[in-house]
Every structure is written in structure tokens, then in C-alpha cells.
Image (tube, rainbow over all chains, first blue to last red; front, side, top):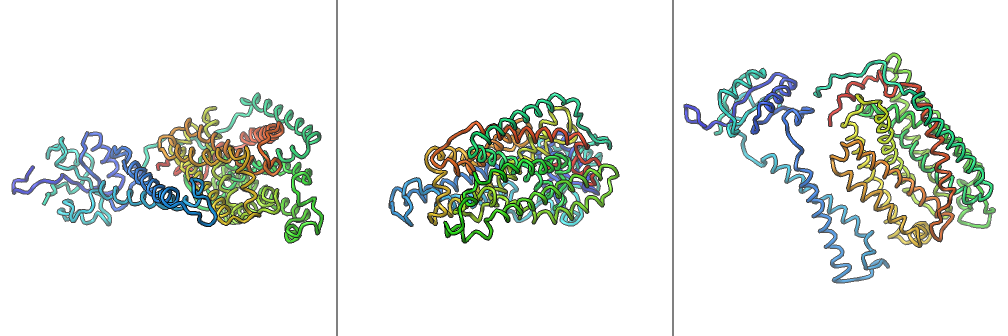
Length: 184
Length: 399
């Protein structure tokens, strides 16, 4: 979708005066059936994920996978050499699987480390990061988002998006300074 | 930001003691029979009974001490979510008073429990070097001081909290916060040295610097499980329906998960350091518990208290389902009972598990007595602090 002047449309966006107004607007947009839209605020708003109709995040599953990978890595790297490849008696300890207490700290650390890596990178990817520039910043008012601005944007790639319907919905929910935001 | 509008009435909710009169009489009857049997046990099988009673006492003591801990932490950190469940924590914490009375058999039967009390001066240089701490007079004075603190602090906690129900004066919250600040270090002190006195000194040659924390870790996790059970039972009976939500269950489940991990962390640290250093006077404790039939119980404890509890509690839907969370809570409390069993009984049966009938009668005697007293206490005040300044925030909890 393009504007008459030839710019590609990113979204229809509006500013809201309070977090509560934004919260109520999010519920209205959710109920209107839009899928590709987002809210922007300077701080997290309690209950917003429910108001936006977001399901449970996949992050926990990725972190679990990372943790299991870390655990298995430690198990292989410890038991492989010390039990199978080069069995040695160290500190008078057994060199069978019974030496496992000595290996637990490393297993624990590797589990935590890999979980943390998985969490960090999966979180970046899920948020579309890293990116150099976000189209929302094409809107001058949006610069207040890190200060005192509360914004909602319905994106043009939403299959239900039409300029008229999006504008009407934002107006109905009390949005101010409703505008089209350009992609580039 | 929640949409809750159904704020409970300011009169609060009251437990109808008459409705559960039958249960109360049944508990009293069970407690009476079990106590009579315990007296019989104390006469005919004194040493075994003394250990069984100490084991049962340790189970319920850790549960009550844990509830006291959660109540004071609530005030110390000015928590929101605990408000709706706090009154039940206070109701369980005041059971310290009957527990102090139930501790008397341990004092009476001390010569059957603690070898160091029977060893004459000069017989064992290891013991003689510890005599300044391990002597009967000091032991008794410490026990009295510990219980005095727990009784006074838990009673004060509940009194002030109930006084606030009448007028909602926030000054009570500030007073309770001061009480909590004083109580926290004293709680840690009394629990650590209580655990060392009553459980660790069963074998005076053995020591572990992590003992107090280990007992605390088990107490905090299992008492949170007990809270889940109590709240679920009250909801089953028709109370607290509009007050405690799935969000509260979710947080209680998170704490159960956190303390499963913490218990494993402390328990393993204690085990690994002793295992690695391999010094005979330290390893004797684990050698007794990791050989013969005790090994299977130790294995069950490690698997059950950590691996199974952790694996299940990791899933979010379990924590948001009261029925399933209550099931896990029962499991964790069973594991706490097993933990205390493995701590106390090998001191007597070092060569293998020897289950005795007095283990069960002691557990039932103390449990039924405390449950009976709890039923008497719970009806005396509203089931949640109706005029707590943070009540609305707690009701609207979202996490």
C-alpha cells in the first residue's frame, strides 16, 4: 500500500494520553480482530499481554531446549574423557558414573550458561532485533515514546488493514494525532 | 490494570466452626488416642519412641517455622500478593505455642536421644572440646529462649494483624514491619541453632556448617506447600472463593519451584563438600545414610524432593491449576517427612531402615493435635486481613 505521494505505508498510528487509555484501546483493537499491530509505551503496563490477546511466549520452550543442550554438553565433556577415554583416579575418587557429584557443579553451570544464551538470542530474534531503524521513528511525535508517549500502531501488512477502518477504530478508542506512518 | 470489580465485603469472611464440629471432634479423638498410644510407646519402647517423636516433632516444627518465616518476610519486604493468604500463615505460625508443649517429651527422653548427655566428662576428648556448648543446662536455656522468641513473635504478629481488621489503621502495618525486621535475624539465629541442637547433635561427632540453611530450605518450601493445601481446602469448603485467584496460586507455585531448587542447591553443596574432602568425622553421617536400605530412601529423597518436583513445577499450567498444585504440595510435604526421617532415624538404626509403629503414632499424635488447634484458631478472625492497606492491590494481582 502506498500514499498518493508514493511512500510505502507502514502503519496507521495514534497517540493516547494515559496508559489506561492505551490499555482500553488495545482491548478494542484485539476485539476488532487485527493481528499485526503493536503498542508502545515508556514502561511495561501490567495486564497488557492479555489486553493485546498475546498467548504464552515461546521463549520458555527455547530456554528449556538451551538448558538441556547445556546439560548434555557438560555430561558428554565430563563423562567422556574421565570415565571412558582416560579413566584416572583423581583425589581418590571413583572413575565410574559414581563420580557424578564432582561433575554436578559444571553440569549446573553449563545448563545455566546455555539457558542464558538461548534466552538472550531467542529474545532478540523474537523482538526482531538487532535492527538499525524502526519505521515508527518516521513519525516525529513518536520520539516521546521513551519519555511520556503512549502509542498504538495497526500495521499495513495486517490482512484486515484498510485505511478507513483503522482510522475509525483509532478515533473511536480515543486516539489522538492519528496519522499514517511511512515505511521509509 | 485488571478488570476486577467484585471487591469483597468489609466484614470479611468467617470460618463457621460449627459446620466442621464433626471434623473437630474426630481430630480430637484421633489426637487423644494417638497421644495415649504414644505414652504406651514411651513406656515400653523408650529409645525407639524418643526418636520417632523427635522425627514427628521436626516435621511439624519445620512446617510451622516456615509459615512464620513467610509471614514476617511479607511485612519486611512490604509484599502485595501475600495479603489474601497471610492470615492462614499467621494461624499456622501461632501453632508454635502447642509445639513448645509437644517438645517436652524430647526434653524428658533426652538421655535416650543424645549420646553426649550420657558420656561422662573426660571419656571423649572430642566431646570435651564441645562441652561449653553441648551441656544440658545451656541446651535447656537455649531451647527455652528459642521457643520464647517464636511464641512471642508469632502471637504478636497475629494479634496486631487482627487488631487492624477492626479499624484498618496503617500504623499496625508499620509496627508489624518493625516486628518483622527484628524477627528476621532472630528467626535465622533460632532456627539455625535449634536445628543444630535438636537434630545435628544426635551425633555429636558430626558437624556441617550448612545445617541451619539446609533445614531452613526444606522448611520454607514445605510450608509454602502446606499453605497451598490449606488454601485449597478452605476454597473446597466454600471460603476465599472471590479472594484467592489463580494468580495467587501461580505465585505460590513459583515459590515451591524456587525452594525445590534452593533445597537441592543447599543439600548438594553440603553433600559434595563432605564427599570431596573425605574426612572421616564428616563422612560418617552420609555413610550411614547412603548404605544398606537407607540408600534407597536417600535416593528417593533426591529424586522426589528435587528432580520430580522441579520437573513438574517447571510447567506453568501446573502452577495455575489449584488441583494439580495441591497434588504436588502433598508430594513435597511427604518428601519433607522423608527428609526428617532420614535425618533422625539413622541415628538409632544405623544398619538399615527399621520402620516402627511409633513413627506413625507420633506423626498422627502431633499432626492431629495441631490440626485440631488450627480448626479452633481459624474461626476466631476473618480468613483474610479485611482492612489491610494493600488488600485491593493483592486482590487485583496479575503476574
